Amino acid sequence: MSESGIRTPQAGEDRTPDDDVVDLLMRQHGDIRNLFDEVERSTGDARKEAFHRLVRLLAVHETAEEEVVHPVARRAFPGGEGIVEDRLAEERAAKETLSALDGMDTDDPRFLPQLLALRMDVQQHARAEERYEFTHLRRNADPGRLAAMAKGVKAAEAMAPTRPHPGVESGAANVALGPVAALVDRTKDAVRRAMEG
View 1 (cartoon, one colour):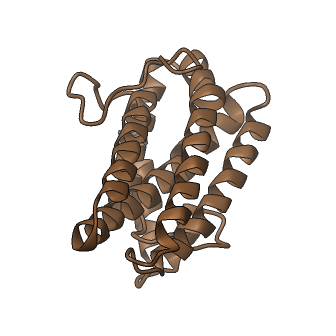
View 2 (cartoon, one colour):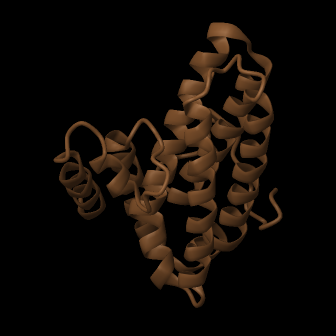
């Protein structure tokens, strides 16, 4: 159990349904921890490949939260606006570090110390989300809303950017920096359809 009282599903755990946004995001937090472990203990091409998967997962996870979870959390409970702003500030700082790492060779002697600093920041951010945002969502949103949000997260993940762009506030703006600007509209449309249907 985490400090928030929410049980953290283990990465790849089949018993955790994907029809609850909190369970889905908690499982992703576990997947992120596991990928950090893999990057740290790997070398050479295996480290590069694991790091590429970590970058992608972090990018899609944060985009999904920005597009689906944070807008609901801002309105769902007292203090939601401040809680979301704090999480967004943490995400901006992590994006800057992640972007610097993404431009660095994984064999560079500076890579591992920066990766460890990023890991600490990401884990602290995840704990804050679990304690302050996810706990309130679980208490204040009905199961149907949590299920609709889970669909929205999955839709956002399908359209999310593959690289972090520092200085860009939202996942939607990150997507716009990609090769096809129309991806932003498709992402938003996919999220809306998933949450309505």
